[in-house]
Image (cartoon, rainbow, N blue to C red; front, side, top):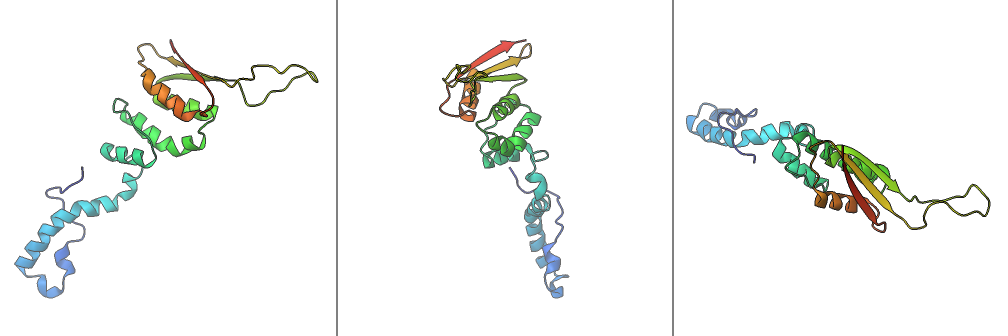
Amino acid sequence: MRGPLRGLASPEPLGFLLPPIYHDDSLTQGITAGLDEVLAPVFLALDNLDAYLSPAVAPPDFLEWLAGWVGVVLDETWSLERRRALVSEAAALYGLRGTVRGLVALVGLMLDGEVEVEESGAAAWSPVPNGDLPGSGEPSLKVRVRVTDGGVVDRQRLEAVVSSAKPAHIPHEIEVVAG
């Protein structure tokens, strides 16, 4: 939470923005000095606004707010670097939503491990004229996650992420493999 910081000097003291007759008035300077202490964090935040809006350097509590801006729910158990990466990549991931590449990238950011996706595909062709089409006519999706030794996977969260990132009409299966 942002608030006043004791001893933080204001870059724009209010007392000296008043007409010159008040510059030597100790009462006026005392009142405006109190306001300077309250306004100094505001000036500091505004002067560094670009840092607040960059997931790479934003304060951790502000990163949660940025995540809300891009519609991402962060897991508090993730490292700060992983949370920053997900918020940074959110816009690009929305552009890839519903694709294999997007699903692999999103699950890869969520887990420490290798992600493979097998799909039935959107088009089929036969190398022989009027021949049988290869594969299955039913759409399917299989997400295989290989986690490192000791890696823990929250299957419920993984299920929610895969469900939200794949086309809604395609049934899916999730397989978690250790090693």
